[in-house]
Image (cartoon, rainbow over all chains, first blue to last red):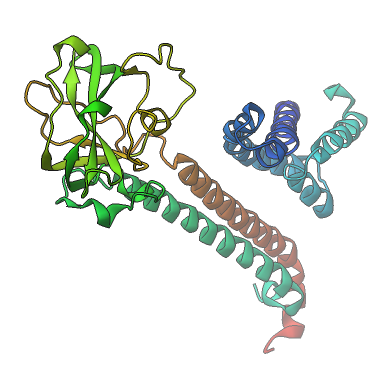
Length: 110
Length: 250
């Protein structure tokens, strides 16, 4: 449980940062920056990070699912936690909620 | 098992099936994309039979992207006064120059195609530029273009084979392309094609990575579904046996 919890937090943070970078930095630069400018080129090259996000998200989904069984989350919260890896910034809030609740229920995890 | 097939679970089964099918289909779509892009890039045109230049492109056309490396036959007149040397070209590990002479296609004052006649170690070693009419075969290449600045515009040496630089040196209009002679001119060595379609290791790799991702999510949906079925079957089982006599025969 403890290892799962730590793994979940690390992955959630990673997915959150990658997703925020891709969708809030790389994406707008790629499509909104003037064509041919260095910012636009950067946005285009940085789009490769979507692949990284996708692969980390795969691992996140598995770990989050295992944690959801161990911590007995409701189906609705499990779905929210899984989908949070696809909605920018939501995962930071979900991770906060998960940590708070788990620490409350399992004081030894702190 | 019967309870799992009851109408109130149909929604769950349908959702699971849709997830698996959609993920599998999206994965197959990305996989096809990966294969197609590799196949398209691998198409090596350089060994094909030459086609007339007019079939590949007209004098005012943009460079046809699917014709990189296509051998073209051209018939025209040399424009010797337009000869230039393009610096920084490698051949057999040595850095030298490409020798470029425009060829006025059809008429002597018609639009001209810059032709890379070959490679020399230094401009002084180059034979005098050719004159007169000729029929030749060359590999079609898109013009170069970068921000390299010609540091000495007074001489015949250019840093890049750029149409905008060449057009100031001849009276003719120029094609938006150049050709590299398949057989170098006398006194020159072979110029190596530097713009050939190549299948890089990372070509469309992104499509393949996405394909694997989609299949993974499809498998994950399947896994969750099966696990849910097992759990449901496990919790329902005692109930089933308890009610079995009542419900028997149904």
